[in-house]
Image 1 (cartoon, rainbow, N blue to C red):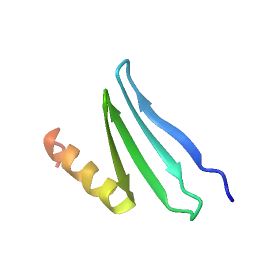
Image 2 (image 1 turned 90 degrees about the vertical axis):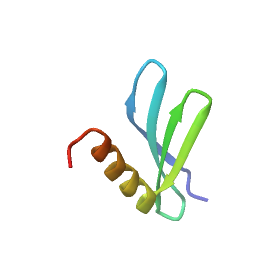
Image 3 (image 1 turned 30 degrees about the vertical axis):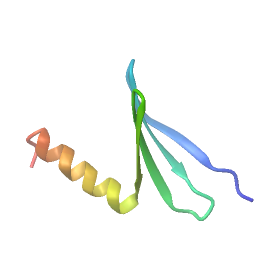
Length: 59
């Protein structure tokens, strides 16, 4: 079985965002906010980024 490869995308003192390439080749994205972790598949991640852009006033 293929090992899951992970990559830290960004990290602060209390939070971290990382991605993982799953054994089936699909990318998943994870945002750890203290005791809460959000997990996203590719399509959900793209929509989440659109939401964050709207919050930040970029679009």
